[in-house]
Image 1 (tube, rainbow, N blue to C red):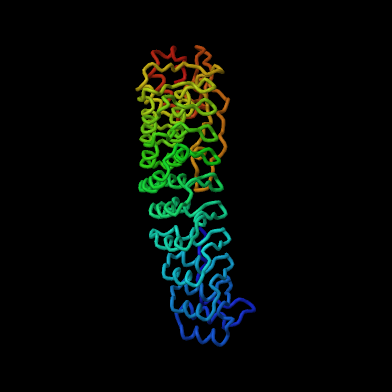
Image 2 (spheres, rainbow, N blue to C red; image 1 turned 30 degrees about the vertical axis):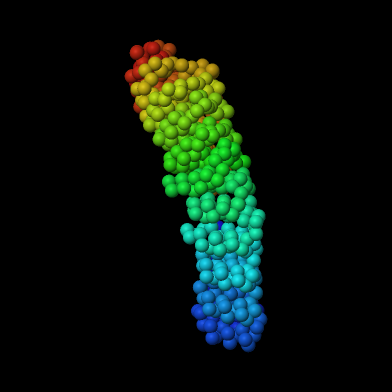
Length: 448
């Protein structure tokens, strides 16, 4: 939302302008009706005199809430639809400030409610920012059918903005006036995406307003141009309440893939949202656990990020198994390769039959991975798409501990070298305790 330029009536007049220009603006700002009337009577051109921002006295009346001065200017013939350098009119400014009195005055003087500023936003777009729907309702009374869905430069309608601001009353009002809930913006997002993309639990009211209008499967699972559904965004924000509402609808898919082949379950696991993981698993009607383009399951994502609580939720659910990815690496191996010691302990506690000697397709038993990071899965800002997926590294080390290892010259088993990563010794110790004997784990003790 473009902000207002600073209001500085005491600023010196720009080069080439008359001092009277500054005086007429000052009179408008200060509410000095008599001086204003005297100036514009003496020189009618002062009615629409622009300052350095292109703003007229009428615009300053709006900014300073001087209704009587505005009436004086309009009676004297001031141009109601004159725009400043940002192409905003007095009606734009009144809508942005949420000033219903001024909006009534300007609309009575035939102010153009469809005029667009440099961002191609109309007063209707700007009216959505306020908690009260009065400004929005006033504008809708003047609009003809079809005008309610005028779009800004990002192809967003007033309904998109109302959903973004989490204003359910505005959403209801716009839908009542036949606003189309299925219009995609420049990123492919419909209003439901913006309603779900909110950290506030109260966003459930806005989400419900939209879904009550059309609780269809296509709306619930609508994918933006990055393949992300509203559920992806609710998960990314960690908003359990919105996730609960979305998944309560029968047609909502918890296994929908984005363009990087990641489902909402992958996002929840990657970000460590254990309660959301549990909710998604319980409402996963497909009965299968999805994998990404590398064959990695959500369990892999939680394991490499060392989210022990999340991994525990997965392992205690009957539908989840530690299946290997396309490289033959299990979530346990991902955890070991990343030094995720909390996850290692959790997995060893919950799964007594884990084969700690299991090798991947290259024969390695402890891969060093470069797994996807949270910034890859979830948007970092309102318009920021996820970065490209980084595929796992093919580099393989020789043991689960994640340390720099070498063969022991004495026994031929693996030995920790002095160049190892000291932060992963706890993983090494956990694995050693889990093995029936050092030799069954192929671990050398000579350099411990």
